[in-house]
Structure formats: structure tokens, C-alpha cells
Length: 435
Image (cartoon, rainbow, N blue to C red):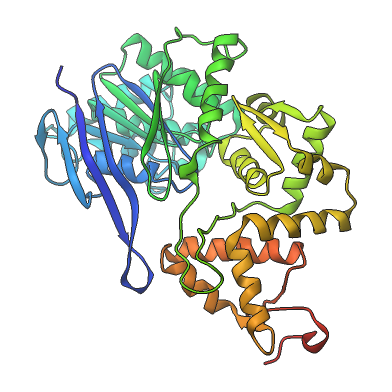
């Protein structure tokens, strides 16, 4: 059977700082066929949304081919509709008018467009709200309008970019169930769905196949078939086993670590990026795991804390970088060093973090080496930012340097003055940074 959408060796580069190029997607091939419900999983910034937009024709690949029903297309993909994370509604238009916008290019009369829009509104459960404005609707109702606007086009492929992430838990569950009911019963003409999500449980609950992406650049690491019959019991052993399997893949990827090239002393080493997570979150997680016996099921602990992948993965990855814990088969277990952190005093923890940072975060060591090499023991933030920007985009370099500074200060490796934007060593000769 010919696929609806066929991605062949897709690569996508974006312009970075200093005229360099940042590769976001690398050599991705993917076929989406009739009957597919695919979930795309991966760490934040892995290019999931970019891949979705390439399928929709909203973003052009740097190289590779995108085919719709075996043929290339120009501009937007004619067989695709998209639902975004934000509701993306026009506040000055009614529900009916917002949904009708999906048909603005359709070769239909005004009455035909209205009739189709009314039918879509009824299908998504908003009958009676045709004349309401977005400000009158709850978040869940506004997302239903976005879904109705996508479905009114009767697309072959429905693309959904984290459509439930802005909703409260109960509203999101209700909307997921309603969408599944429409899909399973064949009440919508859509022939395939691709869902970007950061919720592993959400992927296993809804999709029939999960694709896991790495990052920097994104590649398809693995594909996990989900053959459980609908409706799926989230407490069942087969369900939790699949969730554990995906957690295991996502928390053990070598590809999650961005590689940067060092250019000077000390000896050339790869940079291990630090996730954007606070020391309090890491130590709190370690203490919790220690209280629970030193080993936890990541899926269950995430469910207990109401943490999804985007919340839990940075904490787990930070623990792995500092060697406070290991992940096997979806379980997180404290190492001996991790147990020491759990039992240590505040000052003892700083000492442990300092030792582990210097041993496992090479760029932290480089910052310290530069500061120690300077006569006044200080260096502008911009100096380190430029090094990071050589291989990272501007935003990623900024956030990475923020994380390095936060951890460096916590471990008392160096200090930072926000007003002067200087990193410096707190030694007798340079208690305060000079102007």
C-alpha cells in the first residue's frame, strides 16, 4: 500500500550564531500509512515539532524528499491538517467562524462551508456554542474548536503537536478519550494520525506505534509497536511494561548528549550539556528515591509526582551525568555516590557536587581553568557564550551557560555577578569582580 506521507532521508539545518548551521534533523526516513496512529517521543528540543511541520509543508527540509501519496508537493501538504499546542484561535471570531476558516480555500459555496463547519462542531461536542467567542470557552473547549477546524477539512493525515499539554489533567483525559472514540469508530474521515507528545503514558494509551527521537541532531532511535487493544487499561501489566520500555529507551540514549568540540586547553574533551534543572529538584528526587529503598520504577514515580517526560527526564539525566543513579529497564537506582548525597549535610553535598561536576562536566572544568589562568581570576560571560555558540544555536547556548553558572555557583567552583556579567573566583585577591 502506498503511504500517505513518505519522508526520505530528511535533514534540516537552521542558521546559528556566527553564520554557522545547526543540524536539527538528520537522515530521517518515515512512512505514514492508512490506519497508522503514531506518537513521536523525544527530549525537549529534539526536533519533534519541526518534523511535524515538514510533513505539513510548513517548513522545507534542507535535504531529502517529502512525498504525499507518492508525489512531491509545493507549499503546504494538501492532505494534512494540524492541531497546535496553543489553541491558535482568532478571538474576534465565533466558534463557527473559527472552524469555517479551515475551509477558506475549499471550492465550496458559503452555505456548504457553513454546513460542514456545523457538522464538525457537533462531532467534537460543541453543539450549541456556534455563536460563542473564544473568551467564553474553557481551555478544553477552545482546543476542541482547534480540532474541529482541522477535521472540517477532512484530512487524510491529522498532525497534533502536543495538543493536550496546555490543559488540566481531567480536561485532557476527556478530550483524549473523545478523539480516540472518533478515530476508533471511524466517525472522522482521517486515515492516519501523528501525535507529538512528551507524555509516555499518553503515547501508549493512544498510539499504535511510538517513535523515539534523539536530539542534536534528531534521529529515529527506535520504533516500538503498541498492539494493545483499545480501550487500554493504564494499570494493566502489559501497559506498564510498555511504558517502562519507553522510559528505558529515553533515559539511556547516548544521543541525548550534545557534542561540542573544545578548541584550547585543557585537553580536548567532549562537552556534556547540563539539563535545565535546579539542584533542589535533583537532591529532592535523590532523597525521595532513597526513602523508597534506593530504587524506583520511573513510570510509577512519575505518576505519583504528576510528572511527565519533560519534568522527569532532565532530573534523571542530571543524576546520570553526576553518577548519582543508573537507569535499567525503566527503573532508577541510586549509586553509592547517590546514597551519599541523600545522607549528606548541605555542605557535604556541595563538596560531592563539586567533585562530580569537575569529573563529569568537562566544560565546567574549562571554565575553572580559564578563571584560574587569568591574573584577576575573572572573565566576562560573553567569552564562554561565544565558545558554546560555535556549535549551538543562540538560545541553546544561553540556556546551557545559565545551567553551568547555576551549578558552578551551587558547587562553589566560582561566583557570578549579574550586574557586570562576570564569572570570577572567590579568592582573597578578588573577593569582588572589578569593573
